[in-house]
Image 1 (tube, rainbow, N blue to C red):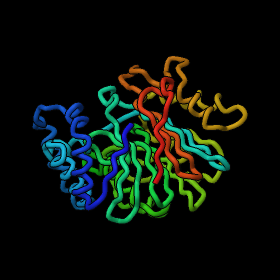
Image 2: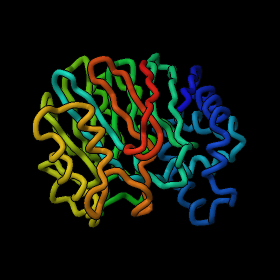
Image 3: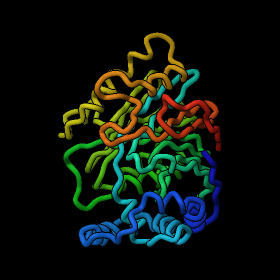
Length: 322
């Protein structure tokens, strides 16, 4: 996997990413114009996001110009995205975050690793989908924050609300966990919802955040082994009405079996390579989802190891750090 390095204004960052990934964007974005229904949806959501995140719309404009795509189409692309992923967070000595990035097979071999220096001054490394704002997978920033994102599916969503893609990108500029909380609290209601593991190296703790329609369910961890798949787990969100997701429940239930003893990165990768049962952790197209990449972040050094493809097939990782 190549590393794309970009810097400058938000427009310039988007333009450079668009230029570097024009082929990947063209491969996944439909050449057809937006349907009238999508056009109406974008017309409703765009003003809300432009007021809150004018700089991110400039990033999308730059990406559109750099890749030769229509701005409205890329904007719509950033309002709608769902995936099912598996995350393992180990806190304490030798701590790590290990993550399977699962998504539509159309994205096979089309993800990018982007290293960006944003106007606020931070350097960010982010696994990025073509045409989308960064942050909606696994990311690390130079403030010592590590992020993983998983889709969750409660039944209560806002017809008009903030998109998690924009929230994920905005979080990448946070300096600490307090800013993470503040960004999310300032953007309600939500039109789609996700789970974040956010670890702060300087603070020595992590947050497990389940983003709901009009609130955040947050647990704080300083040690131990923690898992998340694609349904609400926190004590104050477990009763949230959710769509049935047998795969999410099955994957979550199987993960602890791999850690009966020492907790290591090798065991985590083995867990994320598992195919047993009806609902595999490592996905090869069943349920319409494919494990697109595996990422392992060392929570001490903040070094990120990433490789594309189903985790069971990966033999060589690309290494990057902020």
